[in-house]
Length: 473
Image 1: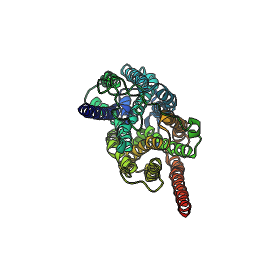
Image 2 (image 1 turned 90 degrees about the vertical axis):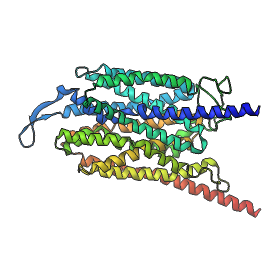
Image 3 (image 1 turned 180 degrees about the vertical axis):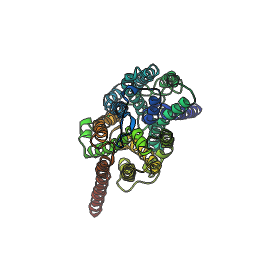
Image 4 (image 1 turned 120 degrees about the vertical axis):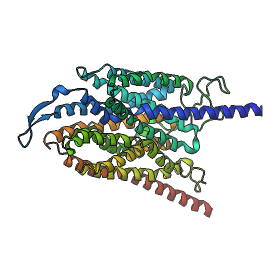
């Protein structure tokens, strides 16, 4: 019996590590590719997408130049729609995930992702409009793959937040896939061939869904010898755990924790989305239409995105730094997790403020530093977002809450297109005033860590008072 149990534990640990490693690869190469859009736009422009909107006109000096501002608007609109739906549709997928589990959600994700890559495969300059449904499908399919992988952190309790942030960092780094496509395009590999390969890779996602992922959800904490997949390990049936819903979904959404977290995510996400969506025209303006210089900076931006997977675990280590240490008297594990999230929330807000300040300064060499701040901050935002929801709210509501916060924040990110139109129109292509206003608005993200700090202080004071009263009796 003991030998069988030992074999069970060994087999289960192997299964867990295979799930972790394969999930890492999935997030790194597929889930967040849409955020490498700046590299893809460079390729699309070379292939003539929306090129019919360019025309020759006089500049301020009376010289005839090619005006492609309407083409830039179309590309910005494609990204605006993709980034909006990337978040907005997650609320419905979150309900789907909590109701039907991992397998159904992943199959939907694979269908959307494959549809999007195939649409790009069969698009061309004449069929530029196919980008409108293609990029949103890739975006939504990718975020769904991430959402189903976040739960893998439950398998490793001592490093739960670290794994969640690691996956989120891999999600950020996957945007470099479009850089690879750009480099291959410069070497003569067509856009169609690259996206056809991405489409065929969906076979691997399907195999992983049935072999290395559960049908339902991974519980937390994980029961002993919990298994899933092909059901060939330990138990012929997938372990099922019924979790009691002590807190309603409505009360979670109406809590101050959720409201502050929503504000924190929405503002920072808007700043990042506007930066990514307008990066190409911004670099073109600062480089004075030097295509080679724009290409160099675009490559530099895409290369920094690779570092997301390296930056994100730092946030996880901050969140998990108290694991294994004794709790304070009367403190629960959830309260310790919440207290540990405070430095993460504050540091993420500070990074975003610095990133926004650098992005507002019209100095081309400075943008190298902006790129570094951007990738660090993005990896902290999304890893911290998933980890905070996991810490504060019941696991049975994770999919719904994660989807709701992402979809609600998506409404705010729609402001990026009016901002882009304002820059291109009344501001004459100079985004300084828009960047300045956004930087001032960014100060509001510090409300979230401040609220968590006040809550932790009040909680600690209440426990101390209660302990003193009990000691007197």
